[in-house]
Amino acid sequence: MKLSDRSINVQASPIRKLMPFANSARKKGIKIYHLNIGQPDIPTPQKMLDVYQQFDKKVLAYGPSQGLDIYRKNLVKYYKQHDIPLDIDDIIVTTAGSEAILFALLTVCNPGDEVIIPEPFYTNYNGFAKMTGVNIVPLTTFAEEGFKLPPKDKIQSLLSSKTKAIMLCNPGNPTGAVYPREDIQRIAEIAIENDLFVISDEVYREFVYDGVTHTSILDIQSLEKLAIMVDSISKRYSACGARIGCLASRNKNFMSSVLKFAQARLCPPTIDQLAANAAIDIEKDYFKEVILEYDKRRNLVFEELQKIDELVCIKPKGAFYIIAKLPIEDAEHFAKWMLEEFSLNGETVMFAPAQGFYATQGLGLNEIRIAYVLNENDLTKAMKIFRAGLQKYKKLNS
Image 1 (spheres, rainbow, N blue to C red):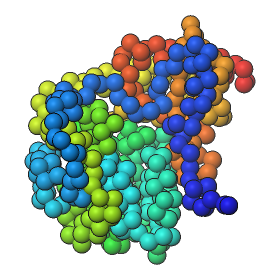
Image 2: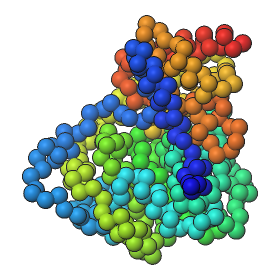
Image 3: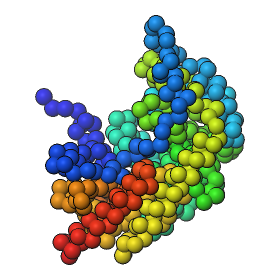
Image 4: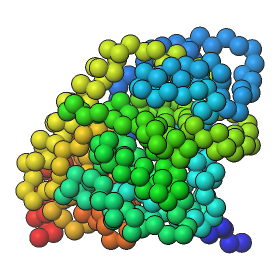
């Protein structure tokens, strides 16, 4: 019996698709430095871990579909600290940011509708679009320009009668780009003029560098009824296994409809919400130290990349990713070769080919995404191995 078209056509993750090659390398005794996935090695706050260790209820019961009141009330306080005023009913807790994006697409789009997304974009947007029957219309941005958004007329040229929303990731995964306030204002103008929703994935809000300021879509007052924010604790608290996110909007009709999807899946994880709640008032010193650490890692990786001739890479301002355009033709082939054929002192590196972060066929073939989520010592070793591997690969394929 044939499987569904959506299951057949959904994209394999470029972040995880090379894992069989990594597993084979490990069986050979090769140590792998994983720069392919955004799994931080920063310790999860002890306040969160204490919740799991001290949980003493006799029954782990259902919670409210919209999330625990105590957590949503504290989220209101958290967002207020970021100059985003919200009421408790403007927030629905989700099972990670992924469910928030799914709920947003299911609520604003019918099957066949279109959403404009700057590419390269978080690869799972492709999967979410397939699941919901939404068509992604890519808005191409370029490594040579630091993946900045194009002018208004370029964005407007992609509009059609089926366009329902523009979706952003700010700060960006996989690009590390941070859109300045004027860019967010430009998107807001287009949305208002064409009655479009703007879905803004802001899970890397804290991770900005070089004095850059993050602008939330909910900070644009003129977009009051059209702004939808997606968030998650996974990267904020280095708690990727605690699948807690949220969806926030001041549009009451939108939130009422989202709640019906939330009720259909019953409730988000209870203990994980309590753990997330414990981290709401985390000391500012935690984030200060974390951002300083990621900034050092960003600088290290960028400086190592600059030692490679003919490489294109503008220093990113946010998140913890770098996309680099390599002086080769096929980054995926290079990634497989690194796992199958190359090692230095019994060690090699795994990174994510960037082709899978694009919707436009043929783009990103010679680009990779590096996640600088390892400590400085490991990153230094990994980048040395990477540069040595690239040098040898180029000689073999010249």
